[in-house]
Length: 385
Image: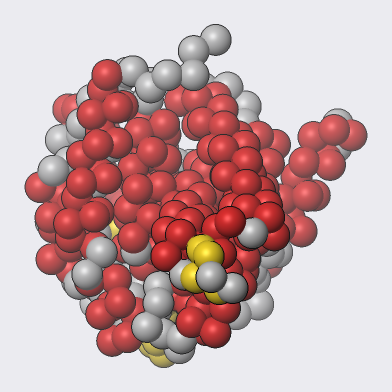
């Protein structure tokens, strides 16, 4: 058993860490305030290979896929990006963990050859459309419909809570192709942004990750070729669930990035802030909060690396991914809460980043499966259900 990162992963971590500190440290506040994503940041990540980690080399990928390290590489990178900007972090996570990974695993050779090089290079930003107004946790209840018409499918319906929707160039959409069975009637499709019949609806006003746009996507008689179907007809629900295992690893990595930011900022502040004639870091109450942060973040990171390794090696990881996301997201929220407490009144002010960490952390307990859903997944694994 080896707990050391190999040379490739160590170099990737350093690259991502340096990029995040230089490019995102200053822009994170700006994007949060403006509630807008800076697309130039995504392009810069593409230029250093961070958008291609889960894509095979033949389609412009980085080589981590062939080395069975794609999910490990993605999780390491996402921790570093989210250390400074969770809005950029979730944009990259969806692009890699939900879009690129799904298309790589389930797409036809023709579809992969046509789309993945543009996704790897950053020319196209990918989005993932599963949730609807009436189907969040109960994803099998989706009603967005795709009807076969000759060599095409006609999409009608809407999707809600879609990360990156206003600036995405290509979407993976789960739609109903049959009403005979709730989950076996769902099919996965790739839909390019420039197709007639697609429009972007309401943009959500959010508490956190405000620099990442989250919007409704509307389909009205949107025609797509049958060649854009991903996998067999009726197999989309299984594809979605499998893909979410990887997505949950990505969100777990986002969570510890936010948690680490909270811990590091609180540690530095505690050494500089004086009360009763000495730094508050000398008080046991503060020391214990910092110690618990460090302990839980380290445990969360190990859970993430285990789940990522399992997925990279083709082993079942649904329960392990659920454990990683559950523990990491709850850890992030505890770290952010305690960081605000250590900052005291200053922690409640927008002059300090811990206020933003506190708002950003909450969503990690909700999207890509709530904490309650993760407990269900873990329990079912134990019970053999």
